[in-house]
Structures are given as C-alpha cells and as structure tokens.
Image 1 (cartoon, rainbow, N blue to C red):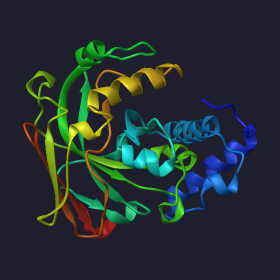
Image 2: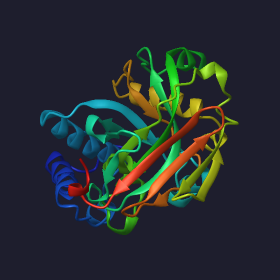
Image 3: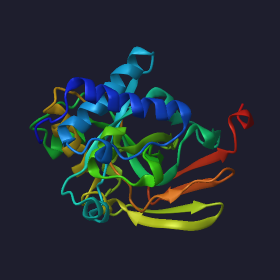
Length: 272
C-alpha cells in the first residue's frame, strides 16, 4: 500500500463529497482529478470515513465485496490486484421485489456467486482450506454496482474511495454446500427482460471465487478487520456489468446453483 499524501481534513472533505452524492444522486468529478496527490492509502481511508459515518447513523456492515477481479478490468485501470468495499444492511433487496432505480446514481448489474460465512476469517495468513472451512454455503447473486463519479470515469483511487462502486445486492434463495459444486467451472447466464446479455463462469474471478475470498480475508486482516460469521462476501463478477433502466428484470442462472432475479421499479413511489 502506498503512503498517504492527503491530510486528515482533505480526506474528510473527499468523504463528504461522496456522502453528499449518495443523498443528492448527483455524481461528482473524479477524486483523482480533484486531489491529484491522492494515494491508494488515502482512497481506502476515505472509504472508511464514509462507512464510519454511515454506521454512526444506524447502518450495519453485513459483509464485503471484491471488485476488479477480471483481467480486463485490471488492465483497463492499470492495476494488478483487486479492491474491496463494504456491504451495508440496506444494500440487500429481496428477490422479485421492486428495486427503486432512483435510489442509485448510474446503476449497472452483474452476476456473482455469494459466500455466506459460518465462522470468522481473520488474516493475514488465511489459506484456501481455512477459507473453505469458513463457508457455510453459497448463493447465486446479482450485484448492483453504482458510481458516484460522473460518467463512470474512474481510476483505481476513485472506485476504492467510492466503496468499490457498491450499490446493492440481491441474493438467491437456494443455498448450496461448497463441496457440491466446482466454482471455477460453474457457468452463468444473465438475461435482461428475457434476452441474454452476459455469460461467464466462476473461473473469470481470479481463476476461482475462492481465491478472491482468500485475498479479501488476508487484505482486510492486515488492516485489523475480520470477516464475521454470517457475513456475505461477493467475490467478483463472472461477466461484464450491464446498465440498468427502470422496469428492467434481470435473472442470473448458475449451473448447479440455481437462479436469482432482480426486478427494477421506476421510482420510489412504485415500491411497496
């Protein structure tokens, strides 16, 4: 991790810009342009300042997500490893229940395999067998990614500071034991309103979603963070993200894991 370059007040200012963007739904200019000295250490600190503020306001951390797990995205941003963000309690929507599009700034969606933990994972030093033992079951999932940065013009520091471009998540309702499926080979098809818009397999996620889970446990563990029992971990998308519009219905179907559906309403008043 690179050393910090921004002072505490500048980090707080950047965090406030992002928090305000959540409230106004108005995107902001890339932080990497506004604060050209910002390092990755600064970006993670800015992310954490927002999470701490949201927790103080009554929200709860329910898991983590890993981003930038595909070779294509890493090459696009000129990086060689993923990033991570936090999943909060109000990020979780039930299947088939209408999700208000206007909660987000510029939402996109992608299919993932979600891990649910049955025991804490604390790194550094977590191995693949230890990660496997900590997984209670896996679920098909659709992650709604969102960016508070205008036009998705993000560099690595922008997406890290912006909680790894987190938005929301819809989990499927069919749990599968990890030993019953080879996640590397588990293929997925994502449809929008019945038409196929993406295909992929678990091997697109750092070679295996388990590799992503181990990376996360060891990376946050080095910062004193434990992945807690009951928490959800989204290890990364199996295919490219797709833009979301009001009225869309997306379904991701995974071999051996079942399916998950996210339905989008047009406005908040369209939801129960």
